[in-house]
Image 1 (cartoon, rainbow, N blue to C red):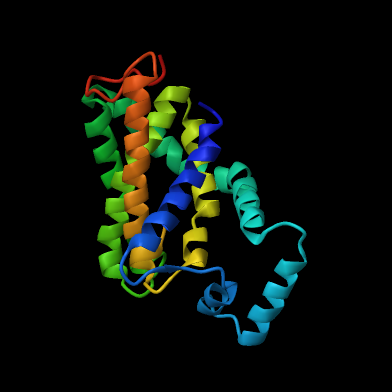
Image 2 (cartoon, rainbow, N blue to C red):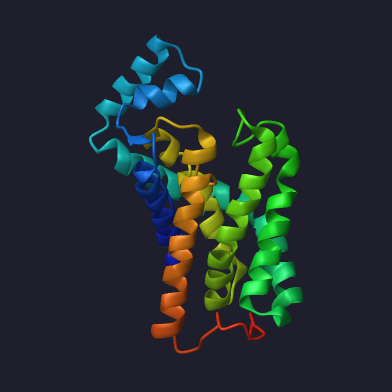
Length: 226
């Protein structure tokens, strides 16, 4: 299950873009200037950045995915390790008797609430920080079963660490390629991202029920490290 730590975040972001495109008022774009201007760059700075991007002999999307995964496996993973030792390390071990779903929902709620201070400061949802607290918590609850699933399958918190780091490295792609709505809708932890997380969770359940030798999503107590 080790490689899924890299594939899963790609699926989450691709799903976010796909679902986002289907939402009212949202459209897919490859005009990178839109994203760069929203970051605060001037017209000239955005044009210069795009010119540099076009000089690279690979498609921009490929470059962004590769660089995001590279960050996810290195510096982002180191940053995420502290969180994951808490969520998928300590909490998973302590709450394993609750079973897969109760454990995941509780961990997801704590995970989301933990982000409240930085969300209120404008991180992720600068235009609607108060609503953003609830959206962020809904997103972490939706994503938590995926993290639980990969961790238990891999018998290692490193699986969640790689997923977390890579997701952080790739997450901005939905903001690059989706336009027409705010971060509450298009962010990887926004409405579109929640939809993608539910889709990937469904795929985890399908794998568990139809492919895996041992089922872990049926509600019984978990033995995460056995």
